[in-house]
Image (cartoon, rainbow, N blue to C red; front, side, top):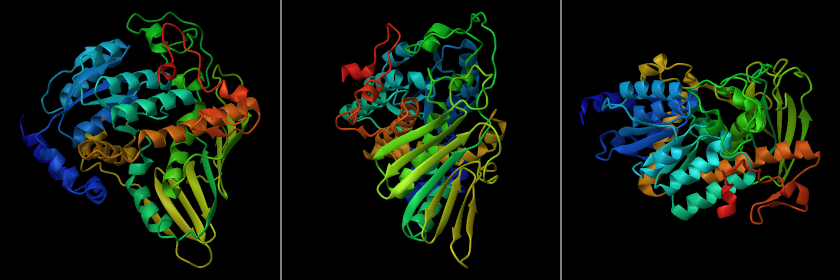
Length: 455
């Protein structure tokens, strides 16, 4: 291959904050990676907005050949093929697939990125691992808790490395804050956490039933989920339905809960409770809550989540964030910044997000890119590659992703059942609650079969 593009890439990499993160996290591997003789063979399932964005970050920092792309939307697929050919150093156009099973049957991929809707994660992740690939799997890892158990079991059985897209663990300013504030003990004893999302992100529409366009396979897109009446292309709007995702809790709380668990070294919550529903936005066809509170209980620590898809945030500077309260001060964290506010007369410490627009100017040409998350995703990709090379667990390992995902699913179940729930991961059941335990596994639409039945 032509080494020039990678020389330029390495020069940019050396000057970036991601390089510092790479060096501090796993030594010189992040630099040597650019010159690695091995070329990683990569495939992507789900070529929508975030699937492509994840793939582009991997192309920026690693010697990869994107071999295969898969999507049930022919327009998505063709657009992704053109963009990948423009971005990867070989200039080659990837092979295109409508059916992910045919793509994985080739068994020629080192890494598979999965950016499909949540209801597809389990089947695609497990089959990708069985085909021989390691994974970059978007969050939440599953639609139900036993799907997550099946993914985790497969990863451990086959020895695959699975990085979950909870990239707060690779966010430069939060890594710094964890080290300099949390780990340094500036907060003292920590006994309360608040997390929130006040984005107006719930889909508020009520469109009519429509004809399915000929370039989109709606039946395959629905897959194991119920086949709802078609009301237009479901790209992005699928998050409005519990049949395909886990609402705003599964989409946004999973990030903040995972960040808090990482920062404070927390495992499974002892108990989860939740209240909420559709209180304000009643005219929409969406069936996810517009208002919800959840409490995740740990030893002498409650982590409280609140979301509203209406009204104003309680703190305009932190509309999607976590607030860690200690006896000596408060630590505020978000994707854009962190802030340590000591009790008394001490000095406030504040750090803003690291951008790398000058280092990676192609970011500015990427449609709908979240510029503030790009450095974190690049670091996340490098960490995955290092975990493969050095046979260690990645920073957002599948087990951590499973705990964060399952905790959020339990919050939704607790709201539905109107009672607190406690999960036993050894028994894979809700403690002393047969009704709740029966809801840990969704019913699949045929001919698809739930993967937990096979482990």
